Image (tube, rainbow, N blue to C red; front, side):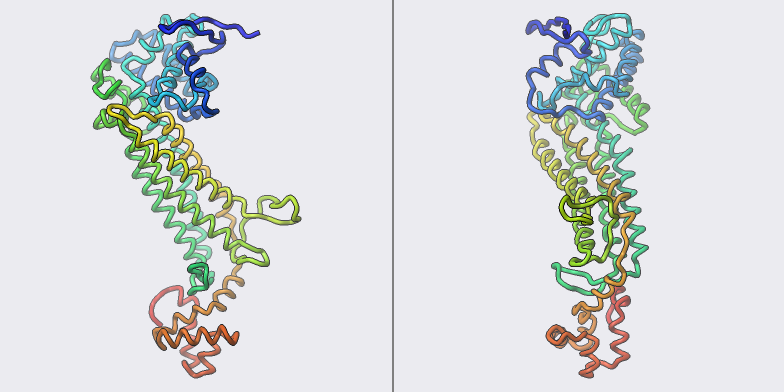
Length: 465
């Protein structure tokens, strides 16, 4: 039978499991906020532990925290960073808009563990108190936006950027590999002029390169941290040097280059730094959608579709049709992209909910941006290694389509005029003859001129013939 301890606050008594590291505030929040199964991710809890560890070190240096207590808080915070207490972070993300319950969840877990390390019991508030010591020089209002920025930038730098760079590399490799594979372009999904498969992949690589640059640029705004602003941005109850010292510690722990916010009032009131990153992720998702859909079309078949490329065969595709193989990675990537776009819509709406001195949807924004960055990172990595890397070209089919496209007539339009070229194309369609055959049979151009103009590879290089 589970045992309990009794904790008290100014509202009364609450029964808490004896083995729990969290305390009365967390227990009340857990009871009040039963909206979903969504809890903050490992990355957020890690970042919150980093903020608490950095704060303890800063307070110790400033002489605001007894060294013995500070070191116990540091050890407990380090264990939070390592993930030892993830199961103790039980508060739903749908809670008070500042994230007070999650901040107090961390304060209580760290204080409880610190007291245990000092010879006390879980749930004790002496000698380490969750508010007086773990939360010293801090407020939820600056801790939560700081945590969101730290978690997000760590993910962007350590996971997302390398994944995008790998995807860009794989696309560039295919652009080079397929540089001489001539195929028919399709505009409006209708036959168009010749293009190389390599040119298609160069376009994809360029899209991803632009998205990468925008994400890097957007992530720069995350470097500014709200820490030190406390409740309303004024820094009340925080030492003037606290923010600078704490952020120096955060940088030492993460290897990143955070700085105090230029305007702490704005840092508490606005989530636009996260919104900017999310917008850049939406652009990346749009590129992933386009590339994924193109690859599905070009891979369609094998006998009744385009079949211009062959994607890696990863698994059986049907429970009823034997030997069927589907483009599973592009389909998974496009679904991930749609989810990212949906997450961006959530953040775009939530970002508007700032009233006077404080933003009121921080938990939702924090949870969503972490989910968005992780999903984008995983999608790019899997796309690069399980799909793009193994794509093969059906060279003969690509060329056959290019040769049979009536739109090669475009190359002769500067010589014979648009209207005449259109009539030639119409006649070719009606008779089943090629453009080349009609040009020579009707003496419109000499065979030498036709050979020169109808050079498909040369058509892919531009210019007037």
